[in-house]
Amino acid sequence: MSHFNFLRNSVLAVVASTALFGAAYADDALKMDLSASKVIKNAEGKVAYVPVSTAPAGTTIQYKANYTNTVNKDINNLMVTLPIPANMTFTGDASPASAQASVDGKNYADMPLMRKVDGKMVKIPLSEYRTLRWNIKLLPANKSAAVALNTTVS
Image (cartoon, rainbow, N blue to C red):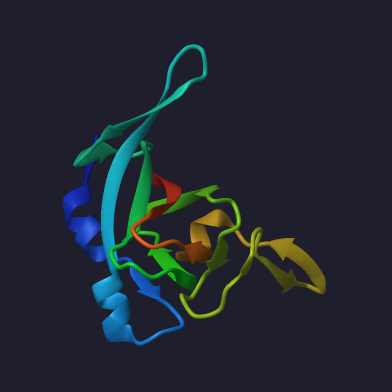
């Protein structure tokens, strides 16, 4: 059974964020914490999240980025991006569900992503999704907001 090192890939899964104000201010105004947790369902169907550093293929992992506004000023229209690490496949589960997806990290659209094949519009396989993006319309002063996506270890 192969194991996947999440600590190494958490570093690779750098979370990028931009806002409609200067980058230096954005760096000073935001604190971001990234975590990786194994997603476990019990017999009753309740979901639990357990911190994880390694996991075998087939394990569902949630990457969660928590953003904290560290200044006494609201941040408006904050765009945050969470890459899907290499050797991971997006499951289709994102929180908030308003996330947009990209196969190239440049062009984003609402999910499910579609493309034309032989004159017909078809869904792009989740395995081709590489990045998700959210627009946090308002992050009040000294408050936090979180985004998350679920992946499966390939």
